[in-house]
Image (cartoon, rainbow, N blue to C red; front, side, top):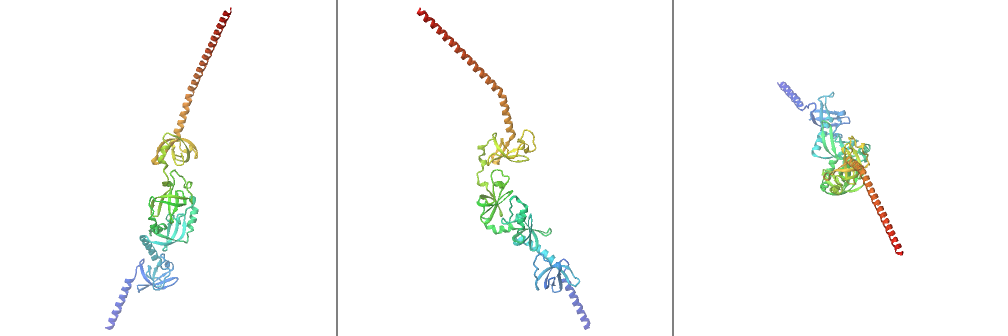
Length: 427
């Protein structure tokens, strides 16, 4: 009787233990919590719920999040179940899988919290810098660098730009996560966004219309960068450098030039400047100098597929459309003009409010030809008039000569009569 009771008790205990183990037995792929009971160089033993012993070994020790690089006994960790029972009868676990998930979860949290973090520059390419954040490789585009680190190279030499970017390798930048996509393995960070946080109070004092004094720190194809005040920097777009048309910013500004500019836009840390806004718009009074129909001399500055840009003076440039360059059909402006040519053009349109002035080489040529034709037609008339004038002069001279002759003969006759009268008296 007692043996039966003992047997039943042992059986019940075995069932309870089996049920308990079953309840605590995880599933493959599941992320579980465990406590370190032994931390070796090549493997780590873990206690899972006080029921099962697990092991992490080999490549599975690699932790993308970097949190488990220096484990010690008693530390609580998370691991992913790889096998329920290996050749040693232990639960096979992985830090690598768990660390990957944890790392991307942390990055998502950084994105949501807009947290400024430190990232190490690993390498560079022409588009930007490769960085590592929480064990995950990410990318820092050139456009997201602060003014201090933005590579400005005369002429935009890509090799020189890459050399500058590579010089940052090993340096740590403060950045903010701006894009996370675990599925595509994409991580984008921004140094500029982190810098904006520190500059908020300073940025607040810059309003549209404010005039700043600064120095040109870089010249690129699309404009010039100007540094001013407390390490602030703005961009003067090529269209805001001067009122006249500019093909290359280097023609009007150089690195090191001191200048004044007006703030025309503020978007986060992006400040847009204008140098031309501080100078009088020459187009306001263009009507006093030029009028439609005027024939003016202009220098050809640039040729393109729709015509030629012509400089009339330092501030006013006009466009001679392809259709206004020749009386005959042409496909390219270079058929009749070359850069640097100085020609006479006729103004055919003028729109000061749009900063537009239309020119015609064709009309100017036609007018010249018409004038020559008129002169040609008038020449015979002029010659005839000269001949008539000469004939009149000759007639007058002849009449004058005749009158003089008649007068002389009259005088002679009169003299003869007087002589005769005197002789008669003597007798």
